[in-house]
Length: 471
Image (cartoon, rainbow, N blue to C red):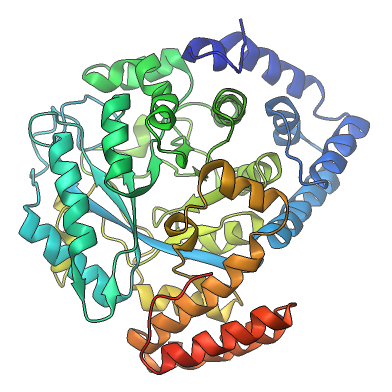
């Protein structure tokens, strides 16, 4: 029985409710009056239910699809403006005991070289990332309780925060590791993590169990209930997502939004971020094994629908996607992207890419500076902001500010001053020139004279050598 407030995975992700929702959406794909009502509701920025979102996904009226995609652009601009947050993944270890059939880290893969970084190697990776200009990392590691225990993760987080070179410093470490206990989530919170991220991969329990035949991750309920335990352990910012292509995208989009509704209903605040990865080739993984891969137009449609259904939630896309696709979805709802990423263990300290230990192939292989230059060319404001996390504006406190339309008073100034830091310390001459021009334009756009004057002073201070201001 479907119950979004339940603590049990098979009740808040109820198969029967999903199937009824998909049937309802299919029957109403041409119901113009209903679809128009849903679009009008989405325009209020109050979000959509999983069933309403499913109807938009099935919509077979081209003019209405165009209308709600345009609305997604408007909602994105209204809530996030032109800011895009930059981050990089940091892979600590590819040792794993799970049997996930879509991931090259699976325990039976004998062709991938296994590697675990020492603390000295982590320090060198962090230095390389700081010398690019990164301030935010997403820590990644395979699930292996003996080789990658929680103590190793905690020590690694401390090493990352303690490592500084020049004006470089990692100010926020988000963590994407396997589902664990409330006690371990409390330890991660005490270590100063930002967002705890865990992808469900698929919400279809039957397919989930086929895709995860062995290892701790094979326990569907334990994995699906991880975000509840994380929030009980104090991690009030959590990030969810599915790996599109493992199961039919219709089922997984509905399951994803039901999970977001569950967190809001039971924990009082929905996900801080939603990621939208698609399955891609990797060592011993071929797309021929996965018949449910989805084309670019459906992928873009899904991004737009998530933005309308969960307007206040950050949306993340990685370098799995090409520059062309990333540019499309930035417009439709994405607010965070990775740049200059290496998905191999120890990849940042080698001049050439060595992808023999990579979790997936990187489509967008541009450097961080090239990504920032591209964002500037298309009039986005690159941001390295970590202020909300460091000021305690997390969980329901962050969402309250966003829903009241107040967060922009922090976000745009913080984006400008962190971009200014990047331009002073790391940018190429061409990127710096373009970035300075954008900062001047953004300064003029600030609607509040007091904030504009304070930002102007901070920008001058940064040019003079000061660092780490935040609103």
